[in-house]
Length: 298
Image (cartoon, rainbow, N blue to C red; front, side, top):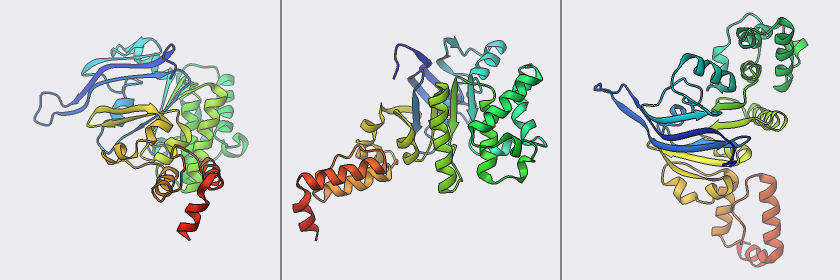
């Protein structure tokens, strides 16, 4: 984390839904969190832990009941001008964003946000074309088409292009691969990695998929019952399998395989995050003295 250059800061953040009514529900309790500029932070936790509530404070969709939220040095205090400016800086992609598509063509849908910024038509057109290329869609081929004629994965990418066309500094992705097939999931994750590299984006990824978090994120923040349960670098976080499982979370499949091998006697590290890294570690362990383990397994 770049503690010297924070882009999102939560201090004592508490959020209560329907406060003062019989239906009052505390979603967040005294959350302290700092996201550094350029980081990719995964936000994980069991259902109802407060993940979506947390990130909706980052662009003013929700206001703190108690505590404060600062984004890019601006306190999110609910003033109209402040919220409008922050929403230009923080792009929010909700779960199933393709449900938000509404224009007759892909071009018009992606252009909607930039036009509302008051940009001239030439700048709008350039942003649309560039954003479609960023998500892997040819603007000449897809721009004139109806978004509703596309596949689910293509619709997802068009919706994300509409957010990228606003040129955010922070990109918040709430379950961006939900409902996609393995190929579609992989494509979205690769695009996120590339956007971050090319544009220097700060990325906050909300996900139930520990595999997605392991592939993308530098750091993992785990919420449980509205509080920060764990905040650690990704390798360190997933090395705490028992602790994660105690709150109903699993570890990435790669980590699970390595844990099973280690329990069986193969002296492997268990902090690998990719299949390639795990394969190299297994080969290393076998060469370094795992032959006895291989013989015993045989």
